[in-house]
Image (cartoon, rainbow, N blue to C red; front, side, top):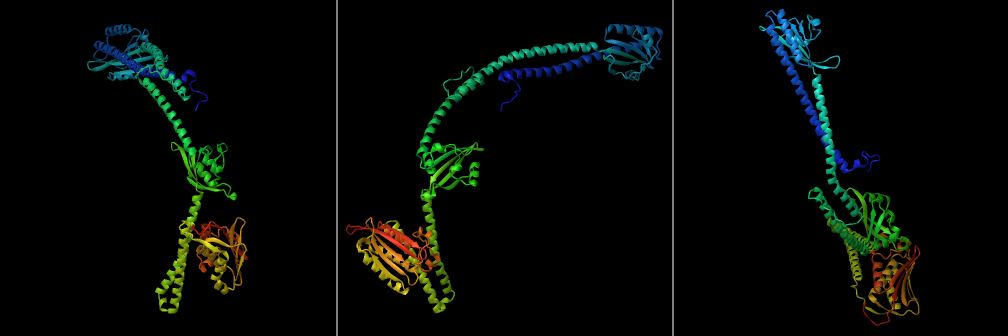
Length: 616
């Protein structure tokens, strides 16, 4: 992120300027550290030497004064004159350093003073702390003071000991002005040296920084050229140091990058070819879920072109619900099954969509890959399989449960009661027969599905076929007082069919009519020729009819309109399915019409085969 107001404008933001500044700052810091240590050590040394010299002079004067002092602590006139002469000599020899020398008696009164106005001080008492300590016999007495003019001074006091007793003191005041002047001159010289060193460092820094930054500037230019796709130029290697190694590494990287881009282009072409020829649809989106790539198969599934889909949201194209839209953007939606296309036009398809999010270093999502698979037929077959298994299981479970219950009842004592036992055994036999019929029908359907059932066609008279069918059900019709009739066109003669199979088809149809036609009703079998040269055989009853919503599913296996009644009548739910398969095996078709509560009509249309007897 760029600063709006840069801290270091222009040249100051370059690496070269930063290197120079770093070198200068390093030298400055080093010189400062050295200067602080040097000045501190010099000050301590000069102050220590100054104080020691002052101490030695005071010690010398105290020894000389002790020789001139009397044992009682009083000095004679000659001794005082001699001391006066020594004090003046010492004062004159020290130059401007010593400002005042006093010789004090045991009471602290000034006996001798080096000042010109010293006669005024003689006889006065000196009450300073260092004097009091010296008169007490303490030899190490010194003090640092600053007078009212701001001048720094060092004060020293030494006891005068004669005959083992303190008989007086020597008091010396020295100015430190010259010492601090010397220190100031030394500091000025040191500061000049620092400035000269900094100037030389800056010059050397410029030269050194140029040797480092020049290859970097050239590498920057080469990097921009590489970014623009120019891989022909090579970096010049000036030395074998780190900069030279970086130049060699840059040249190696450029060559590898050139090869990688060429390989990437090749892989991109391969991927485009794979996507184009895949049987599954593939759609790629960006991090906002907008389509950026799509193959032809995906466009066909969604009925859109690539120009129409690019830039649109994938969730809108797939009509995802709101909860799945949120999961899709979060990258948590992995798989869904959708129905695409216009369902009312009958061309809808079931599509399984698998989503694979693309992560940036396993953190954020940069896009999504959606793979679309058309599973319409698979879903239909799977649904039919599940429903078939469920129906078979249900149909078998009911008689088995009944048999189990009656068997347990017989085992628990019902066998001892003959009448009850016979009735239970009769139920068990009926349920067993029901299971046998169910298994037989299933095996029959299986053979028809696998084309294992061979058709043995023969010329068959249609009128005879219908009359024989009525004869087989004449007893049942009399029991329910149901009338029967035939209605044949005069031009209907004979057809080539498998008589056994067609008898079974008509038996199933008539049996259903008798089951669902109330007493006093009527069942009519008819036949007529169709416009396309086929024969249509019809079975019409005046029964309870079939609701319209059930007409489309009436030929499905195990489908019953009235499940409880059909099961009680011993039906397996497979009769119409078997009839349809047999008719299809004859290359015909079967249809059903009904008016609920009034009538039902089943039409079997068969082709006319004029060739002789043959198997199909």
